[in-house]
Length: 110
Length: 115
Image 1: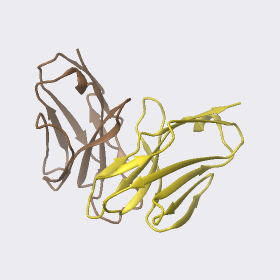
Image 2: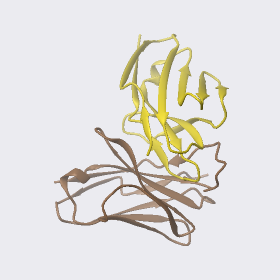
Image 3: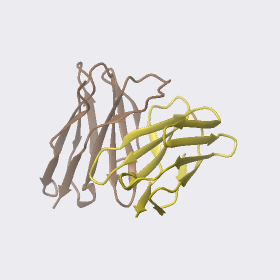
Image 4: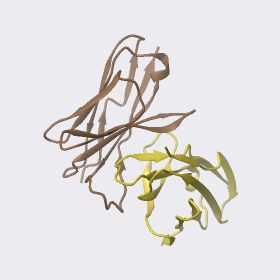
């Protein structure tokens, strides 16, 4: 089976940096996704990591350590519009399904 | 290009009824996955279809079923609705190949309320 853990809620200040952690335990591993979901909207793709290391994309970066079953999403220069839920999801080897964590609700305050 | 289209957006049904939800994937995408999202459980995988074949199925009772048509459009059906089936049902489309570094594209979902 697969188990994915991430913090339930986080609060950060506008302009700051926040790191959202995700740990996973899987019977097989293919890759790890991060999605952003605003309330009442569809999840939107942020990043995909399949190899160890850091992937940077503008204000967002995602890190993966396969040996530790660990990933984080780093958001820099926080903006009010970054207030959303951030979902960590993994795909297993040979599988086409996404297994999601329960999401981290990020609140950005002035 | 058009995104993933789910219809209807909102639905209210009575316990015991059945419901059919529809998903039209992005043009050229052959894989459609369905997820149930609830506040308590988060996003849970229901099933995935590729070229009209179910490739993966989640841990849901047999009341939940789906199918995919030759044009890649997909439907899911829930029979004998229960109050606990109230949720946001999300559909995601992808090319369906293993190396997918662009992610799955989700539709806006169908909000099902069972009363």
